[in-house]
Image 1: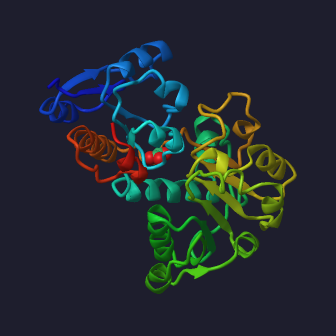
Image 2 (image 1 turned 180 degrees about the horizontal axis):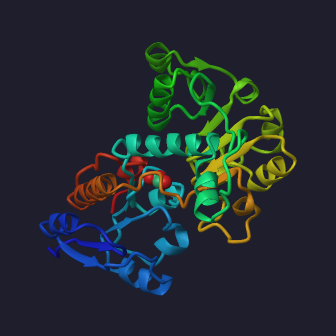
Length: 328
Ligand code: GLV
Protein backbone atom coordinates (compact mmCIF):
# COMPACT_ATOMS: atom_id res chain seq x y z
CA UNK A 1 0.00 0.00 0.00
CA UNK A 2 1.19 3.50 -0.79
CA UNK A 3 2.26 5.70 2.09
CA UNK A 4 -0.28 8.40 2.95
CA UNK A 5 0.74 11.86 1.84
CA UNK A 6 0.38 14.90 4.11
CA UNK A 7 0.30 18.32 2.45
CA UNK A 8 1.41 21.30 4.55
CA UNK A 9 1.48 24.47 2.44
CA UNK A 10 2.74 26.68 5.27
CA UNK A 11 5.37 26.80 7.96
CA UNK A 12 5.00 24.49 10.94
CA UNK A 13 7.57 23.36 13.51
CA UNK A 14 10.22 20.72 12.98
CA UNK A 15 8.51 18.66 15.68
CA UNK A 16 5.29 18.49 13.66
CA UNK A 17 7.19 17.49 10.51
CA UNK A 18 9.09 14.77 12.30
CA UNK A 19 5.91 13.45 13.82
CA UNK A 20 4.17 13.24 10.44
CA UNK A 21 7.19 11.69 8.73
CA UNK A 22 6.71 8.62 10.92
CA UNK A 23 3.36 8.02 9.27
CA UNK A 24 3.82 8.96 5.65
CA UNK A 25 5.30 11.32 3.05
CA UNK A 26 5.19 14.98 3.85
CA UNK A 27 4.82 17.55 1.09
CA UNK A 28 5.94 20.61 3.04
CA UNK A 29 6.47 24.21 1.99
CA UNK A 30 8.27 26.33 4.51
CA UNK A 31 6.39 29.52 3.66
CA UNK A 32 4.64 32.13 5.77
CA UNK A 33 2.65 33.65 2.92
CA UNK A 34 -0.37 31.97 1.40
CA UNK A 35 0.50 29.76 -1.52
CA UNK A 36 -0.72 30.77 -4.99
CA UNK A 37 -3.85 28.81 -5.85
CA UNK A 38 -2.36 26.87 -8.73
CA UNK A 39 0.50 25.59 -6.60
CA UNK A 40 -1.88 24.84 -3.74
CA UNK A 41 -4.20 22.83 -5.97
CA UNK A 42 -1.27 20.92 -7.40
CA UNK A 43 -0.16 19.90 -3.89
CA UNK A 44 -3.70 19.11 -2.80
CA UNK A 45 -4.37 16.93 -5.84
CA UNK A 46 -1.82 14.39 -4.56
CA UNK A 47 -2.62 14.64 -0.86
CA UNK A 48 -4.40 12.33 1.55
CA UNK A 49 -4.53 14.95 4.28
CA UNK A 50 -4.11 18.72 4.38
CA UNK A 51 -2.97 20.79 7.36
CA UNK A 52 -4.03 24.41 6.91
CA UNK A 53 -4.74 27.69 8.63
CA UNK A 54 -8.17 29.33 8.67
CA UNK A 55 -7.31 31.72 5.84
CA UNK A 56 -7.45 28.71 3.47
CA UNK A 57 -10.94 28.33 2.01
CA UNK A 58 -11.98 24.75 1.26
CA UNK A 59 -15.06 24.49 -0.94
CA UNK A 60 -16.52 22.23 -3.62
CA UNK A 61 -14.49 23.83 -6.42
CA UNK A 62 -11.25 23.11 -4.59
CA UNK A 63 -12.28 19.62 -3.51
CA UNK A 64 -12.99 18.80 -7.14
CA UNK A 65 -9.21 18.83 -7.63
CA UNK A 66 -8.43 16.52 -4.72
CA UNK A 67 -9.65 13.01 -5.55
CA UNK A 68 -7.71 11.15 -2.86
CA UNK A 69 -8.12 13.65 -0.03
CA UNK A 70 -9.36 12.06 3.18
CA UNK A 71 -8.99 14.89 5.67
CA UNK A 72 -8.63 18.66 6.00
CA UNK A 73 -7.18 19.59 9.36
CA UNK A 74 -7.48 23.21 10.45
CA UNK A 75 -4.81 24.68 12.67
CA UNK A 76 -7.56 26.78 14.22
CA UNK A 77 -10.65 26.34 16.34
CA UNK A 78 -12.94 28.27 13.95
CA UNK A 79 -13.81 26.40 10.79
CA UNK A 80 -15.94 28.80 8.78
CA UNK A 81 -13.32 28.44 6.04
CA UNK A 82 -14.61 24.89 5.44
CA UNK A 83 -17.70 24.03 3.45
CA UNK A 84 -18.66 21.14 5.71
CA UNK A 85 -21.52 20.01 3.53
CA UNK A 86 -19.25 19.63 0.50
CA UNK A 87 -16.61 17.87 2.58
CA UNK A 88 -19.12 15.40 3.98
CA UNK A 89 -20.64 14.76 0.58
CA UNK A 90 -17.20 13.87 -0.77
CA UNK A 91 -16.22 11.70 2.19
CA UNK A 92 -13.55 14.09 3.47
CA UNK A 93 -13.12 14.45 7.24
CA UNK A 94 -12.73 17.94 8.70
CA UNK A 95 -11.04 18.68 12.02
CA UNK A 96 -10.14 21.71 14.16
CA UNK A 97 -8.10 22.38 17.30
CA UNK A 98 -10.40 23.27 20.19
CA UNK A 99 -9.24 23.64 23.78
CA UNK A 100 -5.59 24.33 23.26
CA UNK A 101 -5.95 28.00 22.33
CA UNK A 102 -8.62 28.91 24.86
CA UNK A 103 -6.50 30.72 27.45
CA UNK A 104 -4.22 32.35 24.87
CA UNK A 105 -7.19 33.78 22.98
CA UNK A 106 -8.89 34.88 26.19
CA UNK A 107 -5.69 36.73 27.19
CA UNK A 108 -5.68 38.58 23.88
CA UNK A 109 -9.40 39.34 24.08
CA UNK A 110 -9.04 40.78 27.55
CA UNK A 111 -5.95 42.72 26.56
CA UNK A 112 -7.69 44.49 23.65
CA UNK A 113 -10.64 45.25 25.91
CA UNK A 114 -8.20 46.88 28.35
CA UNK A 115 -6.30 48.59 25.55
CA UNK A 116 -9.48 50.20 24.22
CA UNK A 117 -10.69 51.13 27.71
CA UNK A 118 -7.43 52.78 28.75
CA UNK A 119 -6.45 54.01 25.27
CA UNK A 120 -3.19 52.06 25.42
CA UNK A 121 -2.45 51.95 21.67
CA UNK A 122 -3.46 55.57 21.22
CA UNK A 123 -1.31 56.70 24.15
CA UNK A 124 1.66 54.69 22.91
CA UNK A 125 1.38 56.35 19.51
CA UNK A 126 1.02 59.76 21.20
CA UNK A 127 4.29 59.35 23.05
CA UNK A 128 6.28 57.75 20.24
CA UNK A 129 5.17 60.30 17.66
CA UNK A 130 6.50 63.14 19.84
CA UNK A 131 3.09 64.67 20.59
CA UNK A 132 3.58 64.53 24.36
CA UNK A 133 4.63 68.13 25.07
CA UNK A 134 3.17 68.48 28.56
CA UNK A 135 1.21 66.53 31.13
CA UNK A 136 -2.32 67.77 31.84
CA UNK A 137 -5.15 66.37 33.97
CA UNK A 138 -7.42 65.22 31.17
CA UNK A 139 -4.62 63.60 29.19
CA UNK A 140 -5.83 60.28 27.71
CA UNK A 141 -8.76 59.85 30.07
CA UNK A 142 -10.19 56.39 29.64
CA UNK A 143 -12.85 54.17 31.08
CA UNK A 144 -12.69 51.88 34.10
CA UNK A 145 -12.62 48.15 33.63
CA UNK A 146 -12.53 47.06 37.27
CA UNK A 147 -16.11 46.76 38.54
CA UNK A 148 -17.71 47.51 35.16
CA UNK A 149 -20.25 45.30 33.36
CA UNK A 150 -19.07 42.91 30.67
CA UNK A 151 -21.49 41.25 28.25
CA UNK A 152 -20.17 38.11 26.58
CA UNK A 153 -21.91 36.93 23.43
CA UNK A 154 -21.02 33.27 22.95
CA UNK A 155 -20.27 31.44 26.20
CA UNK A 156 -18.10 28.68 24.79
CA UNK A 157 -14.65 27.76 26.06
CA UNK A 158 -13.12 31.13 25.22
CA UNK A 159 -16.15 33.03 26.52
CA UNK A 160 -15.82 31.23 29.84
CA UNK A 161 -12.09 31.95 30.00
CA UNK A 162 -12.79 35.65 29.40
CA UNK A 163 -15.48 35.52 32.12
CA UNK A 164 -12.90 34.11 34.55
CA UNK A 165 -10.63 37.05 33.82
CA UNK A 166 -13.58 39.43 34.23
CA UNK A 167 -14.33 37.93 37.65
CA UNK A 168 -10.80 38.80 38.70
CA UNK A 169 -11.61 42.38 37.78
CA UNK A 170 -14.77 42.24 39.91
CA UNK A 171 -16.93 42.82 36.85
CA UNK A 172 -20.64 42.10 36.60
CA UNK A 173 -20.79 39.33 34.01
CA UNK A 174 -23.72 39.07 31.60
CA UNK A 175 -23.81 36.55 28.81
CA UNK A 176 -25.90 35.49 25.88
CA UNK A 177 -25.60 32.07 24.31
CA UNK A 178 -27.68 29.56 22.36
CA UNK A 179 -28.07 27.55 25.55
CA UNK A 180 -27.74 28.44 29.22
CA UNK A 181 -24.52 27.52 30.96
CA UNK A 182 -25.59 26.93 34.54
CA UNK A 183 -22.11 25.76 35.54
CA UNK A 184 -20.66 29.13 34.46
CA UNK A 185 -23.47 30.92 36.26
CA UNK A 186 -22.69 29.03 39.46
CA UNK A 187 -18.89 29.21 39.22
CA UNK A 188 -18.49 32.77 38.03
CA UNK A 189 -21.75 34.47 38.97
CA UNK A 190 -22.54 35.16 35.32
CA UNK A 191 -26.14 36.10 34.46
CA UNK A 192 -27.88 34.82 31.35
CA UNK A 193 -29.74 37.64 29.59
CA UNK A 194 -31.35 38.29 26.22
CA UNK A 195 -29.17 39.83 23.53
CA UNK A 196 -31.10 43.09 23.89
CA UNK A 197 -30.54 43.25 27.65
CA UNK A 198 -26.87 42.45 27.22
CA UNK A 199 -26.41 45.24 24.68
CA UNK A 200 -28.33 47.76 26.78
CA UNK A 201 -26.56 47.03 30.06
CA UNK A 202 -22.94 46.24 29.20
CA UNK A 203 -19.98 48.62 29.34
CA UNK A 204 -18.02 46.12 27.27
CA UNK A 205 -19.76 43.94 24.71
CA UNK A 206 -17.48 41.05 23.77
CA UNK A 207 -18.30 38.94 20.71
CA UNK A 208 -16.89 35.41 20.89
CA UNK A 209 -19.37 33.38 18.96
CA UNK A 210 -18.34 31.16 16.02
CA UNK A 211 -19.32 32.41 12.58
CA UNK A 212 -22.34 30.50 11.28
CA UNK A 213 -25.36 31.37 9.14
CA UNK A 214 -27.13 32.34 12.37
CA UNK A 215 -24.39 34.57 13.75
CA UNK A 216 -23.39 36.33 10.51
CA UNK A 217 -23.87 40.08 11.08
CA UNK A 218 -25.65 39.39 14.36
CA UNK A 219 -24.35 42.76 15.56
CA UNK A 220 -25.78 45.29 13.11
CA UNK A 221 -27.31 48.74 13.11
CA UNK A 222 -30.20 47.81 15.43
CA UNK A 223 -27.94 46.05 17.95
CA UNK A 224 -25.34 48.82 17.99
CA UNK A 225 -28.10 51.36 18.59
CA UNK A 226 -29.05 49.49 21.77
CA UNK A 227 -25.56 49.82 23.26
CA UNK A 228 -24.67 52.51 25.80
CA UNK A 229 -23.06 55.64 24.37
CA UNK A 230 -19.92 55.06 26.42
CA UNK A 231 -19.70 51.31 25.71
CA UNK A 232 -16.94 49.54 23.82
CA UNK A 233 -17.44 46.68 21.37
CA UNK A 234 -14.79 43.94 21.38
CA UNK A 235 -14.65 41.40 18.57
CA UNK A 236 -12.27 38.46 18.78
CA UNK A 237 -14.46 35.94 16.93
CA UNK A 238 -14.77 36.43 13.17
CA UNK A 239 -15.15 39.80 11.47
CA UNK A 240 -18.41 38.84 9.80
CA UNK A 241 -20.29 38.39 13.09
CA UNK A 242 -20.39 42.19 13.12
CA UNK A 243 -21.81 44.29 10.29
CA UNK A 244 -18.69 46.36 9.71
CA UNK A 245 -20.43 49.15 7.77
CA UNK A 246 -22.92 49.52 10.63
CA UNK A 247 -20.07 49.56 13.16
CA UNK A 248 -18.27 52.30 11.23
CA UNK A 249 -21.47 54.35 11.18
CA UNK A 250 -22.13 53.83 14.88
CA UNK A 251 -18.59 54.98 15.69
CA UNK A 252 -18.82 57.96 13.35
CA UNK A 253 -22.14 58.98 14.92
CA UNK A 254 -20.66 58.43 18.41
CA UNK A 255 -23.41 55.94 19.25
CA UNK A 256 -20.75 53.91 21.04
CA UNK A 257 -17.42 55.02 22.50
CA UNK A 258 -14.99 52.68 20.78
CA UNK A 259 -14.10 49.24 19.56
CA UNK A 260 -11.36 46.66 19.91
CA UNK A 261 -11.03 44.40 16.90
CA UNK A 262 -8.85 41.41 16.17
CA UNK A 263 -10.93 40.38 13.14
CA UNK A 264 -12.54 42.02 10.09
CA UNK A 265 -15.03 41.19 7.38
CA UNK A 266 -12.15 41.16 4.93
CA UNK A 267 -8.67 40.08 6.03
CA UNK A 268 -6.16 41.54 5.69
CA UNK A 269 -8.21 44.66 6.30
CA UNK A 270 -8.10 47.27 3.51
CA UNK A 271 -5.64 50.06 4.36
CA UNK A 272 -8.34 52.62 3.58
CA UNK A 273 -10.92 51.04 5.91
CA UNK A 274 -12.22 53.98 8.02
CA UNK A 275 -11.76 51.91 11.20
CA UNK A 276 -8.01 52.26 10.81
CA UNK A 277 -8.27 56.05 11.03
CA UNK A 278 -10.18 56.03 14.31
CA UNK A 279 -8.02 56.54 17.41
CA UNK A 280 -10.75 55.03 19.61
CA UNK A 281 -10.58 51.72 17.73
CA UNK A 282 -7.87 49.21 18.60
CA UNK A 283 -6.99 47.16 15.52
CA UNK A 284 -5.02 43.92 15.64
CA UNK A 285 -4.20 41.58 12.74
CA UNK A 286 -6.15 38.44 13.81
CA UNK A 287 -3.66 37.19 16.39
CA UNK A 288 -5.94 35.74 19.08
CA UNK A 289 -4.06 32.45 19.35
CA UNK A 290 -0.67 33.79 18.30
CA UNK A 291 1.80 32.68 20.92
CA UNK A 292 4.67 30.41 20.10
CA UNK A 293 3.60 27.72 22.53
CA UNK A 294 -0.04 27.68 21.54
CA UNK A 295 0.51 27.76 17.79
CA UNK A 296 2.97 24.87 18.20
CA UNK A 297 0.41 22.84 20.13
CA UNK A 298 -2.33 23.65 17.61
CA UNK A 299 -0.23 22.41 14.68
CA UNK A 300 0.61 19.23 16.59
CA UNK A 301 -3.06 18.65 17.34
CA UNK A 302 -3.90 19.12 13.66
CA UNK A 303 -1.13 16.64 12.79
CA UNK A 304 -2.56 14.04 15.20
CA UNK A 305 -5.99 14.53 13.65
CA UNK A 306 -4.48 14.02 10.18
CA UNK A 307 -2.69 10.83 11.21
CA UNK A 308 -5.86 9.40 12.74
CA UNK A 309 -7.83 10.21 9.60
CA UNK A 310 -5.40 8.52 7.20
CA UNK A 311 -5.04 5.52 9.54
CA UNK A 312 -8.74 4.72 9.40
CA UNK A 313 -9.38 6.02 12.91
CA UNK A 314 -11.82 8.69 14.00
CA UNK A 315 -9.87 11.89 14.69
CA UNK A 316 -10.40 13.38 18.14
CA UNK A 317 -11.65 16.66 16.72
CA UNK A 318 -13.82 15.43 13.88
CA UNK A 319 -16.29 18.15 12.87
CA UNK A 320 -18.46 16.26 10.39
CA UNK A 321 -19.41 12.98 12.02
CA UNK A 322 -21.88 12.18 9.25
CA UNK A 323 -18.87 11.65 7.00
CA UNK A 324 -18.25 8.31 8.70
CA UNK A 325 -21.16 6.90 6.73
CA UNK A 326 -19.64 8.20 3.56
CA UNK A 327 -15.97 7.18 3.78
CA UNK A 328 -13.73 6.66 0.78
C1 GLV B 1 -8.43 31.56 15.03
O1 GLV B 1 -9.05 32.52 14.67
C2 GLV B 1 -9.00 30.28 15.25
O2 GLV B 1 -10.17 30.05 14.89
O3 GLV B 1 -8.29 29.41 15.78
